[in-house]
Image (cartoon, rainbow, N blue to C red; front, side, top):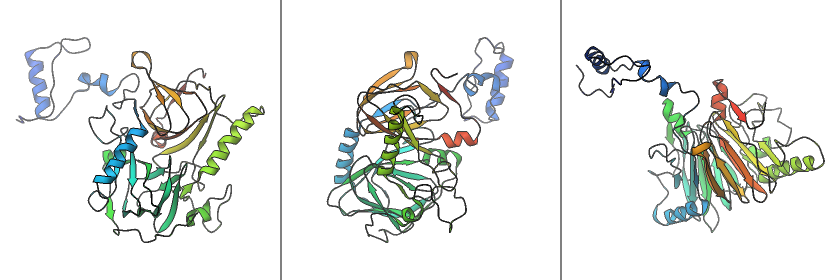
Length: 373
């Protein structure tokens, strides 16, 4: 008989549970020894009436993250072993794991002047989003891609990539990956590349952009669909123009915004029209000053970063409701099925990424918006 079984069963005298008897206790010891768990003792946790996410709503302050990243730049080298000077957000509800949510990883990455981050590849999909600064190029499969404020940059899974800072100032940015999901399903692979990037050139546009980043146009030479977007960088000037035009159309009385005063765009894969990465969705949102959004909740989790402006976020409902002020660079997590309301004290731009593609493919995605039928 197994004596160190991790299964532990009790015989509570509670509604919906069998009457405690010595025979029932003996039956439960048999279950424990054979690593079995009866559904009738677990159904409330396994099948709740609505999602009960382990992750907590939380805010990380960019000013503090940047301070700690700068200190790390003084003390922690970049090289083999650590690979990246990346500092992950650890959700307080996930027991100290370096995960923003059960499926999403988010980190501030910091590169000192004239420093290289070595080349590697992994099956996890990744992106970079730049809140401030420039001077770093990420080199993806040998293609140097400039990183500048407001840019959204892709590193799809299993692409060799490294970074080099060609400037005399340090730079920090947001990394987003699907590490927790890949870890949970046991599908991770990792491979080292060269210690330094192969190309230290500094082109204004990558080769991928020159081929693919022309609005509404795709090269006839590449007719096939791709799992991830082939566009290496979605530049801020295009994102900004799209959001500006949506709000201008609203002012002129035409449709285009998500709700009054709320413009939003989704970064998309030009070969499919779908999400840029198979496991993550990325969007940019802009609120006019004074706008308050309808409360929205959805299955799946998301991470937001304030790109510019100041505002307030209201997360949760009832006794679990929390309100925080947010400003440029601040990051916050919205767990699954937790209501979110945004309020813009002044014009407010926010970047958002989520695990929505996973739930859409599983046909288990659900959205509820306050006031919607």
